[in-house]
Image (tube, rainbow, N blue to C red; front, side):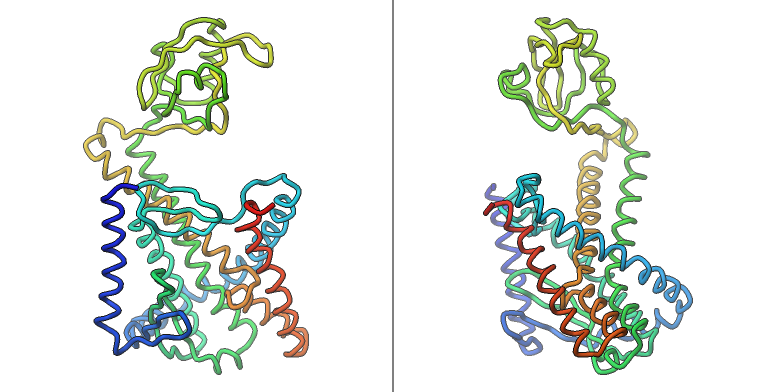
Length: 378
């Protein structure tokens, strides 16, 4: 943590505090959550819903179809991973993604701390499409929007679109599911768009220039040389894939001096024998392997901006897909929990449906909490 990150994070917190202080007459405190309601944005949602009604109705059908498999997958993943954590098969669970005064992503017990500016941009890329989609679907079903707004839990921002709850409760099961599923589906569209844009940037602006490896094995050449960075070449031969690495090392005899260039520098190693006894040399690095990309000559002058954009798109993808899936878990008051309640109430008495939904919410909620803290207490 550098001084610059610490100061910028402190400025971020101060700006939020000043905005709250300036608008304090319109802000309400509900429990530990600060809420600011507004009517702004309602007219825009109305126009958008009416102008593109056919398009949004098609998206509504797709969102309903997508929501149930995602809910089932998310629930299966949580429960299955919880069992794996208990039995020592899995060492990682779900992590909270939070902002902090850091320049690179850092892992903490139960959480990932990422640069606060990435986090803020990513969260807004999640919140705005999510809440606007709820509003658009509500208006398509002739459900009034009471207000829009933002909220704050400590220094963590959020947004909401508040439909008329009485109207929504009296509406059909299909209408409820359509409104509830719209937000996560919008997140999936944003995530897919970020992924597609990343792919297009890589194809047009980057070229394979090295190989990233998982780590080094103790007491082997790479470990003894304290080798770091992506491997770019071995004995002058370019390395940009796991297959190329295997081909080059296969032709090198053990106990031979080799020269490895990485993104961190040049390392001179003495190759070891392969542990499996096969011909070739072994330098002591582990999987997973990933191709390392660098800007091509045409894009070299924009390398800093491209790397920043790629990192940003990666986090928009991760946050959009991750939050979209979590939001569809059958946990009230998540949208997935409200979808489950609407479906169960369709096939049972209203009180019984609510009880079943509440029970499932507790079970899946506990599984979610255990996935966050389980790896550090088992």
